[in-house]
Image (cartoon, rainbow, N blue to C red; front, side, top):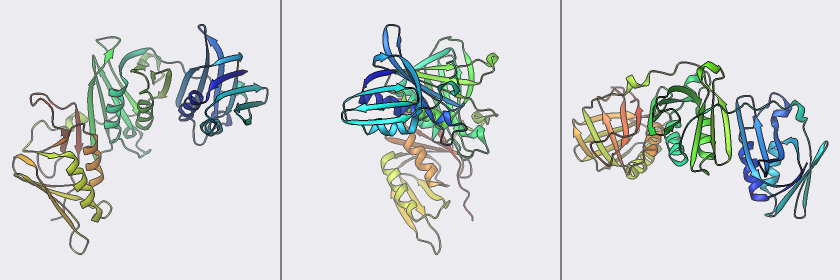
Length: 379
């Protein structure tokens, strides 16, 4: 195998493929990136692949092939090398047990891994629909923030993807907060209805990395195939991941439909104040918020501890309310809304609150909701 490719093109493709490499591979070949240089439909392509039996990644780039072929090399080492090469044309020449990477005056010789031992990558399921890549990335970012990180509760480490016609709903929860985002997409079958539980970290990484193309195609295996897999493709890149098992909480019952108080605060000022006041809060110590007409007071620390107080302008409809939150969870929710004004909706001081952005049209509802559990204050 022998081919030439521009350094930036190769480095970008290798870095993206290396994302899916396992940290501790169960067998040595899974630490490799598969390089396949061939002519495909009249164009000369290099296909780079990685797979750890859970997540697969594959990208194709244009190259100048002198000798077609396939080889397997250490993915992390190749990523380090290509990232540090000079900005010139790279030549890769594989012959038996060695691969030579040449670029300008730099030359690296790598040992190959046995190609015949490398597992076959899973096939992409049939495309289910497509969505704008930037919209998808933004939506996933808003929701993934609330996913759990406790691997002993795997169903909470995922994002629930619900497909109902032209509406795509994403939801995640770690039991202390819940994030839900609805967006419009283009389904292949307008009457389709489906549900999948996708690992949150994989989904977030994938959505971020597929913004180079205008759209992301989503491919979901049907229940009859029994494969439990979802695939994403865009900008010449494709990735698949196995779905999580387990019953996701019935989250819609947690979302209140009526509120006793609704407050609106400038988001940027609110976030800065939360960061400042929470500096004195010990770990897991709540941040106290007191809403009244035209005023929001933030407090942290009590008794013999360091204390902080700050007041902000705010608007309030309904009754005055005092409530306390974990400051990190509060900041995550405020940071996720795409509005300059944060709207906080309360039922009581002991029941979950909803954070949204202020909708441009008062008649419409927000497509993103972040539910946060309050912290009970000792009397």
